[in-house]
Image 1: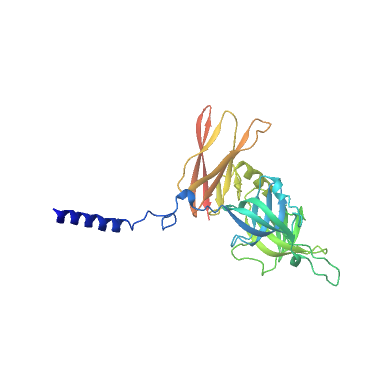
Image 2: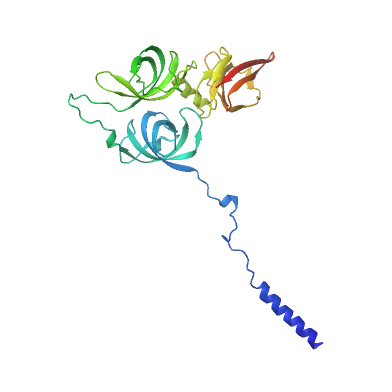
Length: 324
């Protein structure tokens, strides 16, 4: 009996020694944090030069940050974030240090939300050097326009967007600026950075894009982007276009008129993404314009069907789209 009791006491002491060495896990002991505790990266820093200033938007050229993006719109809702207490004024040529969102909208130029401008400064290297004939070089200017005439290296365009120019102008685009992947032909829309002087010589320094005219002016595209929750369409088509072309990954919009007794709906189509839709304010004739913001990632031939719901029944209308 004593032997049995002795053995039981020994067992209890050994077990206590073993299990007493096991401790409950502490926070950080190799156990991953719960999803809600994971750090969420929602912003990033950007150094950039302002090219254009618009209501609710700054068009800038990144200097540090954003990788290969060479131009981008910074969108903001509160004008107060522009009130930088010291530093250079917010105007073309000013360098800004800003905090922006990490989510970048796929459009051209791409767009991103601006949270805060931390400081501004003038880039001393961007100031013109004095020259003997006292001709002062102006800062780089970004111009978009439609090509209406080509003569050698001289391209006459109808200006759609620029700070210094309007109407028809002629730009010299040297061979070393041209890009074989972006041929320029009459009727194309182009975007270029140029340098100018008081001798009216306008010379392109960089070709940003060249693409077929999609029957839409840039200022109208900016207006329509407001109806599409900020989606900036590369082109806007109407029922008159019916068979059109687009670029893979570049959003475009299709517009239809409707009133209080009718409504347009887009049918689902494989490979076609409805990124946003919205309507314009009512016009004097009682009609609205409904815009469908669409993106297609892969090249190919697509047919998109739209359904017009009216008091007299439903009617279909199809668009044939070639995506390159």
